[in-house]
Length: 266
Length: 287
Image 1: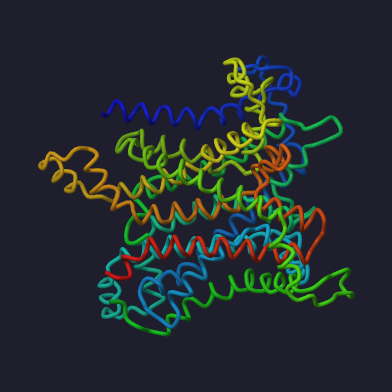
Image 2: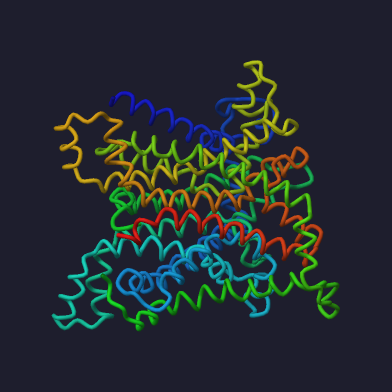
């Protein structure tokens, strides 16, 4: 039984890792070797592709751009979603169920639908080509998700805690920040991870809302096509480097993910 | 029961304002486009429901809608059971937990266009591992020219990319089951199938709701990965709804028709998700 489980896990991890290995493998090869034929590991390992990324301003600037809008988005999403999730988990109010489902519908809106209106909207308010525009646009799908996940975590905290705190003379903001938030730290961690993930990998909106100054890494990667064809090596290296911040985030929240969303009703 | 208090609206207000800004205004713009014929910003005519009628009769919509439904169905049919199996096979304690969590989440963290690129390379018969293996086995595999292979590649790519999400959600769901449940099952000599069917699956219901809804929405909106991998081809074999729409809106700059398409597209997702949501939360509301 145990053996069978380990076997399933190993096979699946292999399935997950082979394409990742291929990406790393490619990033260490020269373009000639990549296109020359099938090699299971780099015959002449080279860091040239990584050198391009860390020395050319367009490349590392685009990393910083991506990081800046992703962290802004995480921050905004959490700031607005925390009180809202509290309201949904603790009270009934006029139209609460409709409001909750309406929020979810925004997670369903295909970004392709919103490309043009977003472009016009953010151009009109003078935010086009700034990281804040992308951060706000990504709120469209991250805020509903954040509310959804946080609401589940908050519902699992007994209501008696709130009541005791109010009897002890805490005001709402003080209770919320000092007592409530520390109790749902795992939920905040998991939510931050999801916001990070969905914002970091999104291409369509990020590309449409930026041109030069705020160009994100994902759209920089689509521009490795030159006269001599696609620069596969640099593209692969950029992909590998793009994995790193995500690995850092998942490392920090690993215990929280394990403990579970499954608390409460989510 | 939760107390009824309309002051709670103040807490929801920031979310409402923010999401309204980035959802309602653009949505109104789309509605506005969908009833007009626009030549340039100053020359526009009201055309009523003409675009809708044209779109609904457009074979491109029918074809890609069919493809989209088949695709999303396959995605759910493969990824949900596979994700549950993987979650059940995850180690429960020790160093294996963080290691497998991080390894599992790797595919989720790859930017979507890179996902397409990876599979584009790995599926090639000359320089890619999988393409090479398949061809050495005597299969005539080529995702660029054979629609069946293109479909298989896009599906396998999606399974690779997203099954981890289902697995992670289910894993955290499984972790919330107290040990006493398993002990009781052992005393009753329950088979492992019975444990799964009557203990684990009911506890997973809520995370599965999230998993199924997220996977349905995202697979229904898939754009970047097949666009990079196959460009929608060969022919239109892997052209899904988002791509048809983007071609219409940006490629042909056919605003009115694209806007009408957008709204119909959105309504379809809304309808299907609503059905899922109501069906799966039905019991909660009763209890």
